[in-house]
Length: 371
Image (tube, rainbow, N blue to C red; front, side):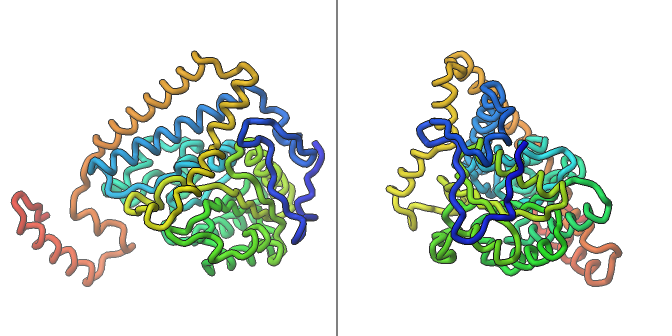
């Protein structure tokens, strides 16, 4: 396989890698074709199913929030290509550090459906055991996970293995100091880490143009980190550039910055109303670049996505959504006093006083638990 010389990309030379157009036409790129040479129609059908399923999970979770079963949910609608394309490129021993929106990546890593919603239902402080699926629980503090990923990557380096740490974050996080500090450390020590930025065009209600006058991928070379800008709605291109970056990290080449240009078609979270700040015409333009629709077009043109196969994929998605709903409503409420567990390694008088106050507060309710 020919090496992709990521380190030779410089400011002004960055294009947007695309292997599958919005119309579903397969493009050739001599730099990246070899990285997905194993992806035939069957493999593409599997990626298509992943995207359909995770969109269905996202739709169901949004409905659960609207129905009062979840307190909040961060939709990923429109970002399926970026998450599935990169998530399916990883090895089991790679370790993921994500924000709160990477439920597609968590699905790829094998997270249980109920674990996706535990935090959002308010019954747990985290969703899954990170070491069960090699993915840290989602980070809500914007950009902090980039430092965690870099630190973990330095540990990988010290252990002498060829695993890779991957940090997922949004365009808004690139304005945070943590992200910039992480890139400094990663570049200095050639850490095996990938900085995967999903540029979904909006940092809550702030458009990316207000904080990035140039493509975000152009920032990384200033830290000494090669970068790639990819069509984030193109699952094939995302997989190709991620595989290339992983190979570079495994072979001692150090970090890579990937900017996946995509679009958040839904709200920032279910507490947000994007119609207050977003032009409907912009949304319509991005709907025409839908990551699932373009794969459907390619597979249909190849005769691989028959009506029967499409119906089977939809049935899988519906079954998974039903399992998610059942797992969500079956989650047990925690003991109210457990909120104090694991806050400190050892109890102290301040914590004891707070426990006492909270216990007395609970007893003011009918059926209150004063334990």
